[in-house]
Amino acid sequence: MLARAFQHTALLLSLMLSGMAMADCSFEVAAQTRAEACQRLLARSMNLGNMLEFEREGMYGPVLEAKFFDIIKAAGFSAVRLPVRWDARAAYEPPYTINPEFFERVDWAVANARRVGLAIILDMHHYTAMMSEPDTELPRYLGIWQQVAEHYRAAPAEVMFELLNEPMGKLDDARWNAVIAKTIPLIRQSNPKRTLIVGGTDWNGYRKLATLNLPADDRDLIATFHYYEPMPVTHQGANWVAGGSGWLGTRWTGSPAEQAELDGALDAVAKWAQREQRPVLLGEFGVFSAADMATRTAWTRAVVQGAERRGFAWAYWEFGAGFGAYDTFTKQWRQPLRDALLGG
Image 1 (cartoon, rainbow, N blue to C red):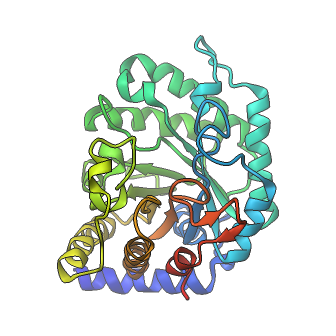
Image 2: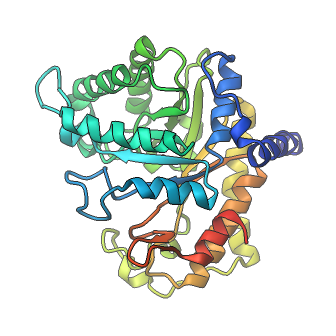
Image 3: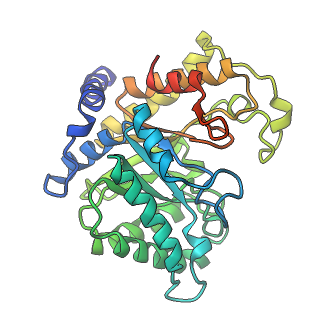
């Protein structure tokens, strides 16, 4: 079974890498074909992290600039994932109106992505109230999605929606599946053919794909997971993670045991994808800048190669902040990371 899955994903990978621009992700093709084509457009994506997903742009990273899209496209990436903190710009009373100026800012980002030929994911990010009080917050979450969906109903198919970044906390499996069951039909009212991206709980952990209850008759879906294992490698020195400072100096060399751990995780996702017949996006992965460059490079290259062998699209976390592959001060790619991502 797994051998057949790899044969299938090898074909997808060949298409992804040789014909990303030719993938017909338009609304005119059949749903399953469209989702697979849209996934191929996401083949090698970059997260524009630490920009629009906080209460104020520029708090924890660079202010988003038009030239970033040009730089990403010129390097050879095919798409961007744009984390957006919609709830910080929405009213607390019905109809939960989103600030029009913020909508214009996101419109500007979408226009710049499309200007250079990048597909773009609009990801609902850092909605912490939805994690801590999901039952109370659900009407507001749905009200925000209704506005976003209606606002972008005429956008091209290369603009995709991600329902929620890293569900966790009180948003457990049962609650999250109930939210999915309400959110997808709501979006479908205005976007009947839009490709949507959905991941599981536990911070989009790969093990939680198996708990997703996706509508069998909706094939316009891409499943997503995040991978940051082992955490002592990827989050060493991260001051927002308990114990992060104690992990400083942790190395990753691609030893047989390290590679086996990575392969086990990616194989589990590949088996799930084959069984469910869903295209997959590895939506986040990366190593924080406190790690030595050799570790960052070796781990990143291994994850990219493993994902691509299995036909997964991927989106590196992230462009120009704490995990950044690009140095916004020197205005240069960190070449070892750029090569680990795109070859070289």
